[in-house]
Length: 522
Image (tube, rainbow, N blue to C red; front, side, top):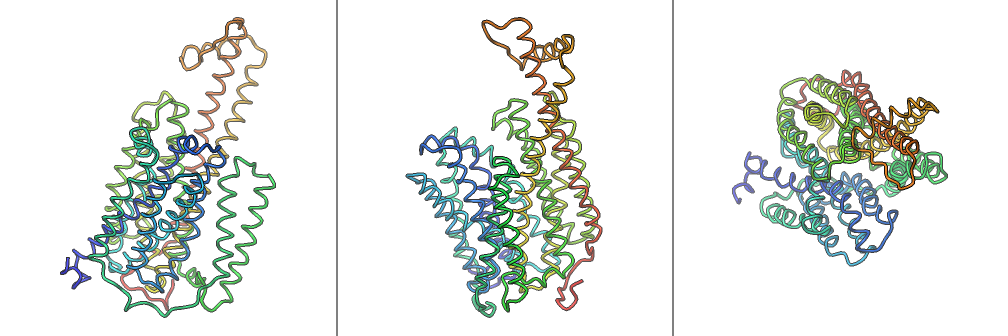
């Protein structure tokens, strides 16, 4: 270990530090999805309602998003090592506090502490990788590191369901402790201090941070609550007004201030700007599959959370295999064509799910997952490499933090969009199918026979007449069919959105950036 400290550029040192960063990133990403299945158990434990318990996830999401933009400024003040290990300490301490929470309020406070640490872990980890690895090696390193980002959300619900059933809801937090403490111990031992290379300490852009926080909090609340509150409700309109106002004020402040939180000149670097936009498209594809497929398998097919996780496992495995490979390809080949191929594969995989049915076989469930996993890997590692390699070294921390913000906002937007679209599609199909039945006894009989024959419709009632039993059976069959069609439409929309990013992929500068030249942003 001492040898690694003396030679921070040695492969052993770099890959050892990367392993520490991977542990922290994986835990932080995992905690965005592992909690959801345990929420009903928390409701019972603390005697709170559904609206209250949702703040366990909402508070985490908002605190994570708000902490991410601070990374660029904090790196200049504290250095990479101090900031990363401090963030990991906060996250681990927050996890311990969540596991020991004695009340609803203490759980929310602990989740916010956990989120503040977790929000910084991912962008500062990316900045450390850019510091350790030369531009021609960053693709491989980012590919290995990004494996945790891709796998975490996929296995989170399954792992959360297993831990909750086998132990208790507290175990989904306490499982972080041994890994967090191990990463901290190794990090303190081997990571080289970069305090001597700190940038000139600049004043904190307080007003920029306030307006950006206002934008992110109001915007994410609108996206997460839109379906529940109604997109035209006073609550959502107020959130959107705060979002627009905050964004306008933030951009105004960043334009005139001497030391902005986000240097708007970063957007003159073509690959950085395109990577920000494409990160949102990628998030729709990634979260579209992770969000819609489990809902389909659980709600329409009837699988348990753990069974659904097993069906999703092949997709997670292929991502784990492909991320390092796609990173290596990003170092050797044109990023433009890799991202283009990834976008097309991801879009096609979601279009294939447009035919998913409760009676679909294993090939139909797993096949598109494998295609989607390859596509997302080809999109993610090359895009991160293109973005980081295109900006000056001193701006990497800021660039990585805002790339992660774009990913977070894109994921929330994708889930909100697809959830609303599927819900509306189900309603439209139910009305349409119901109108086909009308008052026709023959149509009623046919729909009732379908429901009774498939076995998932059970009509009960002591005093129901034969005709009434037929009507109830037909109505339930129609609703089931409408749900299937709604999900199919949702998959199709997600695929179309991803394919719309193809023209943007063609605009990427495909040249390999071995030397970053700030004077020539294009």
